[in-house]
Length: 349
Image (cartoon, rainbow, N blue to C red; front, side, top):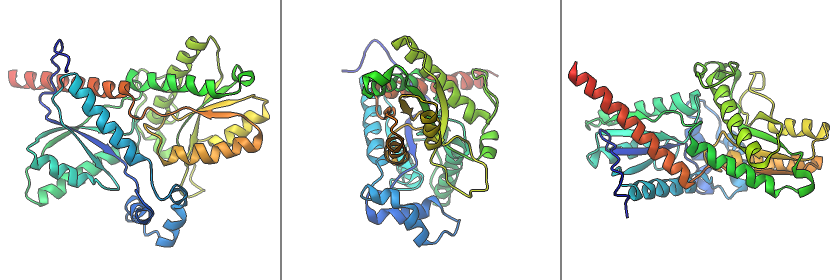
């Protein structure tokens, strides 16, 4: 039964759109999916088949779609249990269900004020501005079809929201417990995120007041903020001060372009050379265990650690954790209240 003691209002919004990257769901989807991802770059299909080998190792299936279905269910369940009457839809940038199709469905169902939750918690071009561009393109397509256009607003970055941070703390503690007991006390924490070109990091946005570091723009500063929050909470829980570092993974692109470093595999080599007894990889840059996590960490980095003789474990991502779903509800109500206040002031002016 919904909690009758609380009457949350999403007004003026009438729907939430879960917006994600998308991924193939079978071997025959891999190359068409990568063609969508690399649209306009003229990359030959044979090269895309080579790029897609990570997907083929997993049967051509990216875990991201199944995980988004779980998150969709978790959001609907949380909203229902807390009396938040807000339908939740799902659309992707690069695979079915496509964003344009989902927005068309929203309009057909009569929705006119839509909030968007992107499955990226941080400021960057690919994790924020590109989603805004995708939304603009999809709305332009609907306008070309003569459909009424909904107003679409994106939820703020949620990297430091407790609904995102606390599940990562517990996941880090669980990963520590997986290490050999005799190695656990000296284990280092390696917080990982997707590497991006340094130029993209530097232009990812101003460093917010709650962060302390300025290099790498908002993208790096926000990740450092989260890493610090998790490391502090783990210290409080365990009584052990653990060395930690923000490291990067999943680099792509031309080798002559500088990207954020160090790479996770290089970092593991450093730790081994320093005599560190073990490490925990904490993928704070990802909402769910999609391909960058399953291959780059669970396969590639884990193989590197085994080669070095360095015990490692990997913390799970937030995924469909009920606390994350509750955090999204909090963000929805926060934005709705802000909109009502702004509209009230405008009406009174």
